[in-house]
Image (tube, rainbow, N blue to C red; front, side, top):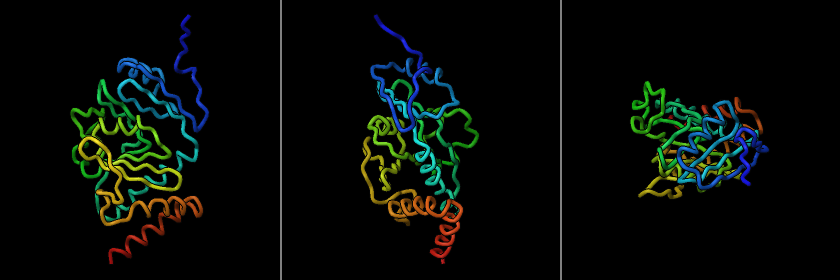
Length: 213
């Protein structure tokens, strides 16, 4: 006998995840619709495998702190667009919801975009994930063509750069070539946790302005 459980009935404890295999693209789309938009889970789908992740509260805070890289962009006088955890899809192949993501180099190409169709708009220039070690997630980003992914895990930042249809680790960020991002981000995160985000941002602005002199 086959027992069918509605996807909404599955409750994940914070910090846990489940993987569902052998799902068609239509199955994935239906599960997204059933889950709805008002939820606290993140999803990643790649070629038949769906992962549903329920992040910890600290996880949410970490990627929000890292997202304050917009302060660096502001000081540098650069444009950006924050697309948060928008669902990005490459039909029949992959779908993913970043913890947060940004358009930086391609901001002009997403003006007026209200529906994220990758046949019309480019993928985000930078996606940021906290505490993600999932191969499904990275494979989904490869399929989407996201050029740069940051993963913050266990007080370390790893930068992945898309090269020849695969990700390679890099000590440097092409988006911030003049900064040692792998060293800077962990310090900023710890500073925000220890002294508060506002204090961290004040010190970051001071540091960046001094470096410009």
